[in-house]
Amino acid sequence: MKITPVLLSLLLLLLSCSQSNETEALFLNADLLMEDHPDSALNLLNIQPEIIEEFSDKDCAYYALLLARATDKCKQSLLPCDSLLNVALDYYDDDEKEKAVALLYKGRLAVEMEEAEEATTCFQKGLTIIQDFPKELKTKNLLLSSLGNIYFDAGYYDKSMEIYETMYECCTTDLEKSIALNNISTYYCLIEEKDSTLMLQRKALNYAIASGDSLQIAMSEHNLSLEFDSFDELDSALYYEKMALEGLPQKENHGNCYFNLGDLLLKTGKNKDSALYYLTKALDDVSIESKASCLKSLYKLEKENGDYKTANTYLEEHSAIIDSLFYMEQSTEIQQLIYEYNTKMRVREEQLKGKRIIYCIIAGSVLICFLIILIYQNYINRKKRTQLQYKQSLEQTQNKLSSLETTIENNQLMITLLKQEKNNLKQEHDSKEQQVEEREQTITRLKEEKQQLLNWLFAQSNIYQKVITLSKQVVPDKKEMKVLTTAEQEQLKNTIFELYNDYISFLHKTYPKLTESDLLFLCLQKTSLEPLSIAICFGYSNTHPLNQKKYKIKVRMDEEGS
Image (tube, rainbow, N blue to C red; front, side):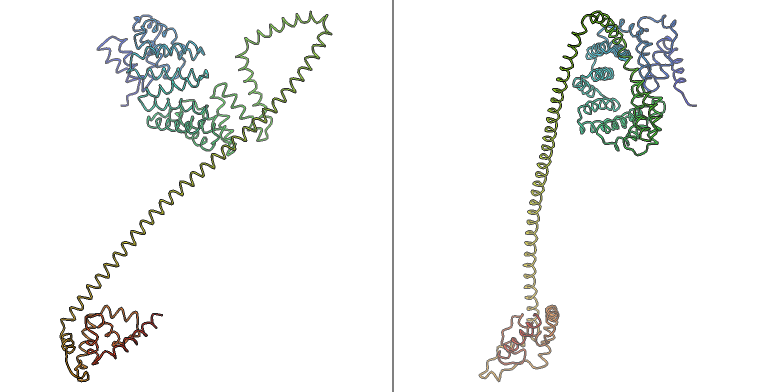
């Protein structure tokens, strides 16, 4: 079974009645329902006047605060709470926090009645009282918000900004922070600080999203749209207004969103049919002042569409509303002016009977003075236009100079970065060259060690011992010196080719024309054998044939190398 707010309140009422009197149970239930279900709390507090009269002064004062709070949360007029709020103001002393709450709603009632001075007094006095209650941040926040709005509407923008900043410091929830930042961003939008305006409004939207309050999210998106519109970023303004309209709860008034969306579509010229739809739909849901603006936008739209008859109708309605507003604001003053004018006219008619000639002269003088004033005013206007053009040219030049300075600074920074990168690359290159050099030295050393090992292996062979033995012969005639036989030469070749296979493969690949004899000679040069010993390996008793062989090998290698 689903527990509705009304059923919940009744259950709580029955439970409380068993513990205390009926009035206290009523107030307790209303207070419990206030935050999440203010409409149910307001219905619960809807008590007949004769019952209220039976309340004690204490109960009546507390009832007044609960009723005003519920009424304010439901966005209804506080006028029915006026007399009850007076009771609360009389009952509570200046050292009680309830007095500050009563002053809050009394001030909001004064705002509703367009009594700005009385509202300001209430809010200021309420803030003075609430300073003694540091934990009552909620009440202080509401008082600051209302007072800041009064200052803003009165044109004291800097003072209102101080109030809003103090209000933000008192915020404890994401919803309160979103409301405070909305107000602060409005101030920055007014002084045309684009970056601060958009940054703060986006921050307000993020807090609204974090709070999960769909109405506050829609309001933040709507405000963001208005601010983008004021900075001529129409696409962004259109995007956020669509988001606001989509997320706005159905029970809330959609008129302002309809009007702003229609006006943006009209400005962008993307979809005039949709613009006409939203502007027409907004007429029934906006205030009288906004309705005048809406009618003016519809007039422009129909005029662009060529429907001059409908456009004139909208223009006439717009003019009628403007005249009506002006008349409502100025009717008393106009009546007084009319009375004074009629009195002066009757006196003047009596005086004009004998002074027509004098008046003609005066009229001529006035006309001449008027012409002189027009000429002088025209001169002043031309001078102002010239000064304005000069000022604009100066601003453009300064902006261009600033842009050039920024470009120069950016290029200088880029040069510095490139130089740094170049130095880093050079260091890296030097490091790699050093590594290459070290590895080449290591390879050379290893090759030498490898060669020594190969030479050692060769020195262990029988054929090497044979060559060494033959090289130590002592004979009177070199022709009698013994050398390696053909079989021993073949054994030597096989041994050398087996040990120095890698070197032979390298020589064969690099110099394909070299013979096996040439390869054997080059390998023997790598060993520790003396030239005479190498000659003995090839069957010679002296080194002269080796010199010829070395020359031929060099010629072949040079030919293939070229």
